Image (cartoon, rainbow, N blue to C red):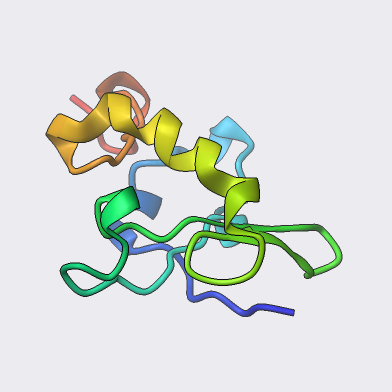
Length: 94
């Protein structure tokens, strides 16, 4: 089983309460040092199953199972590979 810290407030504060996404289910992993995972632009992707087992981890077991994560995130390369909740749906959006 893997225990992850909560996602940073920067991300959590963008999720409106009425969207139905349980904020405690959004997790953030530790940042990788430069060169820590060149094939994923130094991002770590992990898929944790409902029972707590690890399906795949780009820096650990079964890395090939989660290569699709970075493949998807590459469309947000200009934003350091991070997807953001659209401004109209962010809490406190103007």
